[in-house]
Image (cartoon, rainbow, N blue to C red; front, side, top):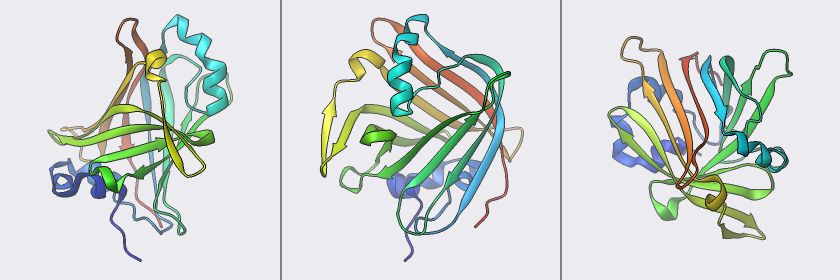
Length: 207
């Protein structure tokens, strides 16, 4: 069975407006053993002091990075599987003096909603994301949280506590194999809750 990559499904013709390194990055085929690894450095991994209160819940659901630092080495593994259409992520943060921290999730295209994907962590907790191609960058904007249970998707008001997410991956104009990324979780009244940003190099895709 041949199925287009998850973000190509979501973007349609806009896929061709992505930078070449971003297209190569996400060209993995569902129902395959395709694997891509990127390695880089997080310039900053930060959370607001009060967000420490959210960390026990974040650890339970595998959804938040509990540590902070600058110039943090990271590698991210993206995999497809022969038995499903989802894109699986394993982000490995290497904070000095700590065991590697894994942030795992998977993304699914919501065909009924066009350019929308859902990123799931443990226990069926997911974030709906609108996907767009903007000046060569792949951009994700938070559309709210859901809980998948018993075949249903139930809306969750987690944005009241966590704020709204924005993520982008942008080609580096100086190097065809590099890109930058940033993630920002910002609360309407409390300001920035989480943020991290970094620089990555794309390695060869394997199958």
